[in-house]
Image (cartoon, rainbow, N blue to C red; front, side, top):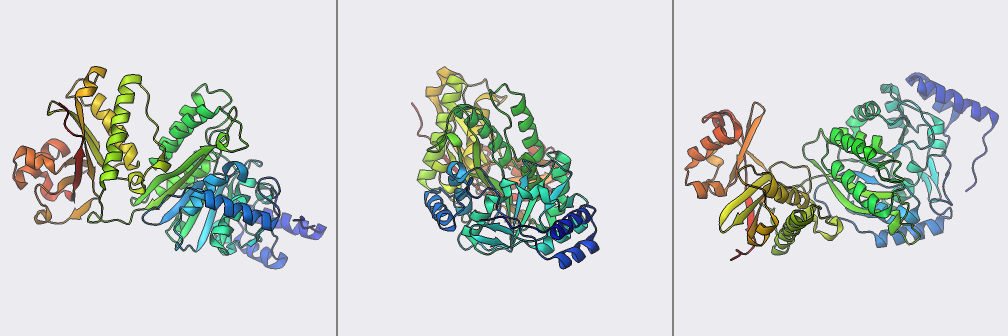
Length: 510
């Protein structure tokens, strides 16, 4: 597609518009847009990152979507982290992310956030003067939202050069057009990589971070280490994102940069864009972050395993489930027990953590859920630790808790190699919390209790009632005093939640 030739007059108009919007003049912005008309952003990487021919591009997208490995999520997908490399390298991962969005999902707008690769400038630039063009046609800009963002936020402007040759926005648009057809977009390029820039942009976008808008976060991961080092570094970075904690994510990036990994230039090129999403997502308690697929350029048919770039597809989504509907099949239980056993034995014997490919797991095992893991030896407890309110997927929680029970339960000595053949594993998966307003709603032996008051909290699993022989008041009193630290009667004016536990374990060893 040929680039549109601009007259000297039009170039002057664009320059004036850029200066006005950078200064935040909302009245002048509207006037200039009305006077000059739209200025469409021409394709810059068609023919290199993806086909410039419409027919060839549609055929490649169809092939990528047929090869994709999507994940089914309950609830609404609110954001996706997807890569922005050439389609031959990262297209399958990107397609897996987009295909994970349910076919009947409806959004008003798609926001695309990317970190600049070519221009350094303060704040963020939102395209507000026309539409984006691709071989598939025009992608409509929601100019009303773009103009509002510029007018109401000092950190947001229109800077033409930020978009002119930036590929990280452009490569997402054909996927959006193929998946959604004609839907308004809001393309945003961040000009500086800093925590403050991410916070400012998150504050500006927060009113739009709702279930009826989709946010695409355009980012690749590790750049240029070897294949094996990329897998290791990208796993750490991906797991940090799953915690939905921007500060933790940033600290992992710093730790990665301090490692002596040959040829590693960055562990996440779009980290400021990801931070922006995390600052918004952490405010929503019902949103969780889950992995879809990981690959790197060494997995591509034309890839080189000596110097690779890593690609994640990761979704932020709500959970639309009820404890009455939450259940695990026998296959799910066997899978979790296998993960726990393999993780325990591998770590105790070698000190290495087993990597579990998320694409091989059932969707419910990648959902966020609390879990306790108990170790028994000769029928007696050998260790038990759980995570009641995690941000990680269930399978990762099980991995973390089995190692915690084996090595960090202060009541017992750490598990040794000679213990492994005598240890039995038991897993308690916790159903979602249900708030209760009266203790009459609590059922002893069926419900676990979670209580919180004045920043303190504690929990007892349902099976504690059977093991202890306590009545309801004793169960609540012991939990309040010994687990929450709020005194024997503290439960009476605490916030109370109930849950159930799905308990299963290995066959007892002789």
